[in-house]
Figure: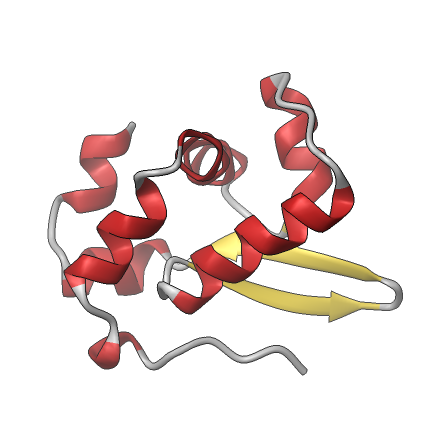
Length: 99
């Protein structure tokens, strides 16, 4: 099981730091567009960004630790989704500005 921080413990500093990386920002925008649970590599493939599996894993971990995404294990795959409503509740308007 993969866990993420409780939304009330998430700081704006952590969120902005995670979003400062162009690949992670692209990833979050693509997840927002996907709208539901999806494989991380599939999300990036649609954007044209090409990175290795270990680099993708690192980016997903940073985003999860910052409270922006949730990860679910599905067999051998890791599916991710944006914690849109929770983040929007904590930092109103932040994710809408990224669209």
